[in-house]
Image (cartoon, rainbow, N blue to C red):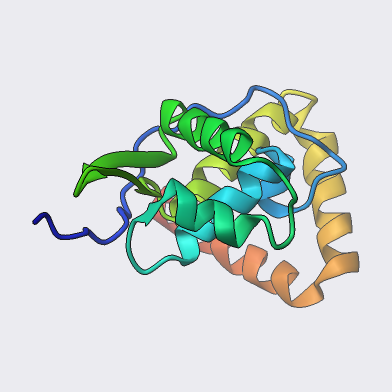
Length: 154
């Protein structure tokens, strides 16, 4: 009998879409709604889950067929976000990438894309929006900038 393993936490270079949904929220800006929900279930799980276990939790909020949820789980495996293992004759899914690493990786890609619009305008807009949404984060940004400048000898 094979024991279940704890979900992985290392970033495995996931294949993220080249575009972001500006109308999305959080992980939903990078992944589709169903993909986001499936990832949330896997991130929250304490151990790998079978496709059936995942579907049972999913269908409470998303009435989709087991075939649909399994298809999307397999797509997430192909994207490098989930790991699929056969345990006791059943397929189990677990997060290959922890949420923090995923958000960090996706954020970096998003910032790189946005900066291609023009660093000066984007930086000014970023500071303005951050000041409106969360002034405390503006202080944190200033601290991070000072730290980075010290590291670079500036």
